[in-house]
Image 1 (cartoon, one colour):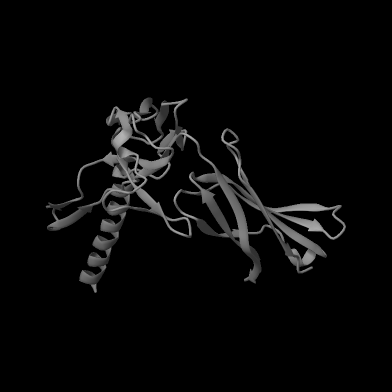
Image 2 (cartoon, one colour):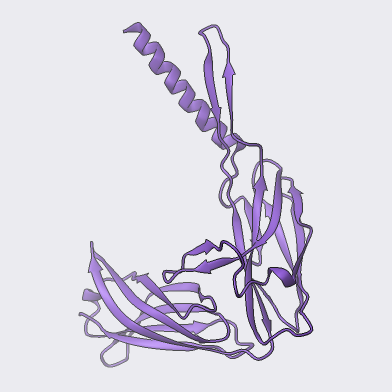
Length: 279
């Protein structure tokens, strides 16, 4: 019984040690603050500065690289193996490509585009990745009066990426909303809709759901997704928007779902769909 208690105590001590190691060595999500979180380059603005800030408790070395990512129909990004047909990596330049940020210290990064003489009209895209460079996880055997102990040390690395869009020449895009519906599960209402994109550029805007009474006199905002994007060349994205109100208490009317782009410089795309409210 005594041996069992001692073993349990050792296991508890190892768990506490592991937790302390994770906190002391790991980089927490949110420690790296990047501004802006999206870069758009074109003939009128061929370069952009980004500001990086380390809000963590220790210095961190970051490696900067450009990678290509695809977006699924649900809006999930995943890295592309090989070259993407819309990759911008060959015409983008970074400076610097590796930095060390002390706690509370910020630094500027410059990214620039160098268009080819025969650059075609259209949009290219890559993602700028900020990867912390840390020591590998390690195992250490320590000796003490109570015998050998195994200390396992892990490091959590939070890799951050932001999109970099390069536009050249004449571009345009249009959007529509389709397959709009309402579902009610576990006391929560959800608006489901498909955002369709056409044209030769990505779209990015706010998707908002609003209840409108039957006579149009009352409007109640139900929820919003800000900065929603459909990246070129994807043609659509399926969206679930959880509503903040109980539709059954709002009475008769309709639910308006509207998408509106934020950037007005090259013509903004907008779309609207309506669903009968269940009240």
